Length: 323
Image (cartoon, rainbow, N blue to C red; front, side, top):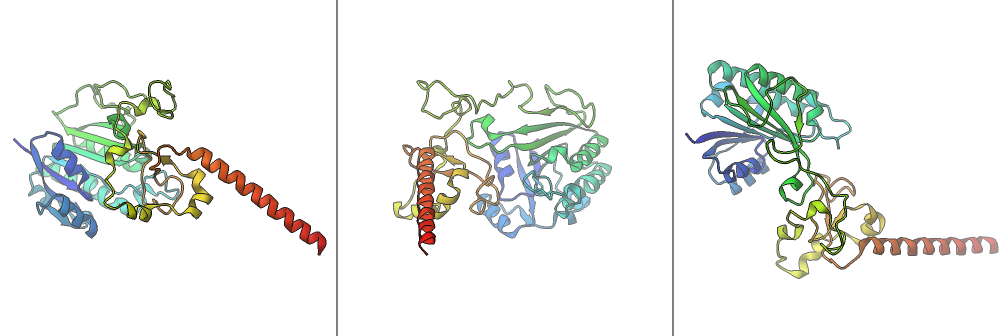
């Protein structure tokens, strides 16, 4: 029987796309999100009319039971849990309210009706695994007879040139269970860093390959995957490239702090909402010129700047003496 999936916090439809490409026989029958712009983009990506703009905290068990869904896909707000937010409040953050409502109120009520989903997939930011919300989630799922497996995975493990570490939880209701995964033993179960049943992934980004094997600067972990250039659009007009260029004054002041990647690079950093606003920990910037040694360029600039400043200070000192 085809799987019927509900997608919560659907955004622009990323989990919908993943589900459609998974090869599983089924479809997303309804999607929910509160953001109007996200709903519009979702409709453009998945023009099936299934997206509903709604406060997820207002959804009820009878409403969801009517969809007869056997799979939930959830990507709740990450701001309450991200390590980039020094003021993260976890379950006490108002943005966590709707997720806790689904897990602690709606799901048990669906179980009482015999209409709970047989499977769940939950995705969030790395940092969720240490939250009290995660403990509440596991406690509720296990009280309802679900077996769970938790993972911390990065796209680099699957050949995608991005190092965005994410938390995933998969849940199946008994008698369903996971292959290659021990039965739940408690709240502190193993946090998998690779797909169970597959070989562990070794992060070798700091290990240099022999120069005769690959281009200078490549790392072991970059070789099996795809490079950034495969994901770049062809510029429609060479004259418009300046529209996305970083201003020289920004480069002069902060260039040494940027995470600069090339089209041939095998990784990029996680992109956040601070991109174009913050210098560090907001995402990588792209250098199209493969032949330019950025480190040498910045070193030369800084050296010239230091000498110029020293020379200016010297002249100022001489003038002060004269006056």
